[in-house]
Length: 196
Length: 149
Ligand code: SF4
Ligand code: FES
Ligand code: FES
Picture (spheres, rainbow over the protein chains, first blue to last red):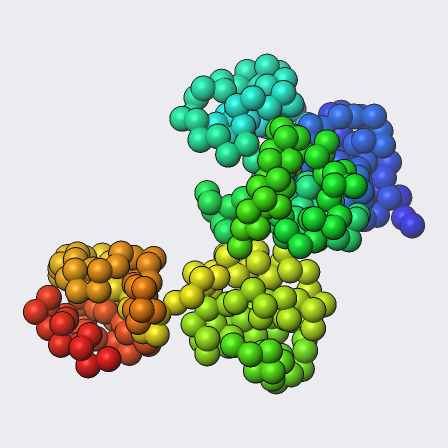
């Protein structure tokens, strides 16, 4: 596999073809914050929190580092005014849905995000898809999925599958960046009322 | 809808997972809604997880997971129809059928839905019933149209 040499935050980084910027950075010990990324799962690009500046032949663009493939002579900046502003905005939007999420609160401190900037609409889910994708890709059970769309999108368990699989697994609960209990709540509801 | 009919539709599409939406659309148009048993059968035969089918079935407004009336009324609330009195058309239909947008009456006769532009603005205000377009609707004409169904 051919080696690709490029730069992250002024450091020369060596990666192999097909790696994403995020993978290369992690390998080089450079941290880029993520919300919807999980090493065992396919790249998803849902939260955009891993946005970085990528400069190619003098052109700078903003890309999701968990999706963007490395290329020769790429110059990546993981922090900049622009990047920080974007991450701050993402946090403020997400905090209106999940105001009590510790992970988001910690990041909010770092990026100076105001958790009360937008009106609260606590749905507790930030649609990172970690639980849904973990269940599908790693456990291959497909007990939980998304339903509806846009602002009404939410997670939902298939009661028949959940009643067989979930109580002994629950591996998706700790993945949730907002509140592990959210999934537990929806699961209980699904089993109790067999919605749908 | 019986299982054999669902199977026939699936067979017609050669049991291809890539035809999922087509299959769902056909069940929807024949049956007016997607019963749980039908979705489970589709999932089983196409080897597609039920979670994905539900995601799709709840994503597109063309699909319904609850029974729909025999006649589907779509009333345009797009800009052109709006300025030509779409609101009054909607109010009249609501009065006559006793249901609001998104609802179905108890006899399963009508389902009511609003849409944003049916693409024939010159005919506004427009109402579409079971795919047939009724243009230049005046509130006084609506009772006649509904009675003829
Ligand atoms: S419930 Fe949690 S893990 Fe699942 S999509 Fe929502 S935020 Fe992500
Ligand atoms: S971690 Fe890259 S988009 Fe969510
Ligand atoms: S606005 Fe009603 S058809 Fe275009």
